[in-house]
Amino acid sequence: MLSKRTIQKVALSLDATGALLPVAVAPAAGTATITISHEMRGCHAWSVNNGPIRATLAVNLKAGTTVKFVNDDIMPHKLVQTGGPKLRLLRANMNHMSASMSVKFTHRGVYRFTTKAGEDYKPMAMMKTMGEDHLLHLTVRVK
Picture 1 (cartoon, rainbow, N blue to C red):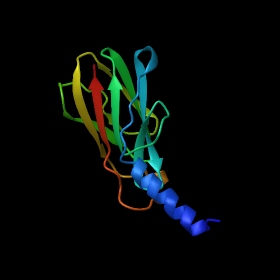
Picture 2: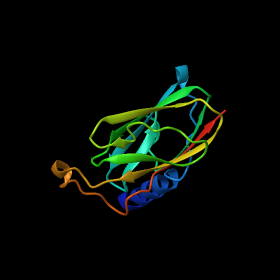
Picture 3: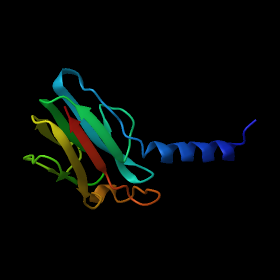
Picture 4: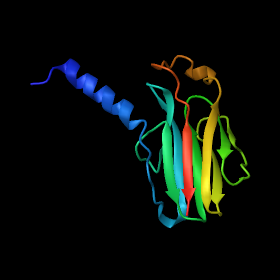
């Protein structure tokens, strides 16, 4: 029988390994939702269509797909494009909980994003996290 400590070590190593794996998503009906959420380990991460929560995501989309970004973290996030065909990001500064913005990917290519995180909202200052904050990275491949 496995000890509680062994089970915790295995769970932590699986969690750390899983955070590095990309997620491929084929959205239905030309839409997808990427949600930034608060995490106890690493402070924040994101997921696509309520899928696995990761600090690094890779998403495959069809041209014409609209992606809605939702900030459900306890701090503001500004979506920043770091590579790929230039997009116009309106309302990229998601500065309150449940703030959102949408981007329509009309052209094929590989787009890269990160976020610039702010400080925790004052009412959430008592929320503690473990370890270094994740740097969020997103790669969107549009075919």
